[in-house]
Image (cartoon, rainbow, N blue to C red; front, side, top):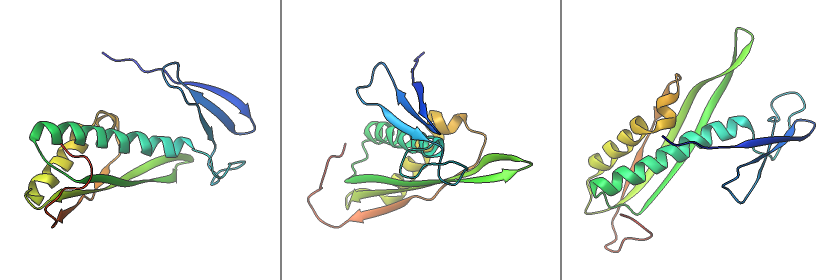
Amino acid sequence: MHTYEVNLKWTGNTKGLLSSPVLPQNLEVATPPDFPKGVQGIWSPEHLFIASINSCVMSTFLNIAENSKLHFISFECKSSCTVELIEGAYVITEVLLHPKVVIPYSQKPDRAKRIVEMSEKACLVSNTLKIPIRLEPEIIVEKSLIPIGESF
């Protein structure tokens, strides 16, 4: 069992400050500008929601790739979520993840794609959600002989 603590202090208007006793940096948060009194340029609950999914999928991918001995050159993932007003309440109705993995020529693209798909399915954050997660992986085979960046 693991426990994580995050604290919030309201700082005025629609802004607050997130902190954790085990992390050195605080994070300013606010209502997004799409809503009344929202603030531009500050992380919102919606950003943090999709960021938690995205970072969990990455962490899970790194673990599965290492255990599967998948060598890769880079991993990045664009993500978004759709917010809709349904029956008078705002809800997140869909999450889109677009991971891009660059692999050396010696690796098989189908295998890399399966590992990305396994990562989303094994991610504890996405497993907690009831909404659909649409995964659109892109696997790029690097033709150079020398891998760039860190890989397992």
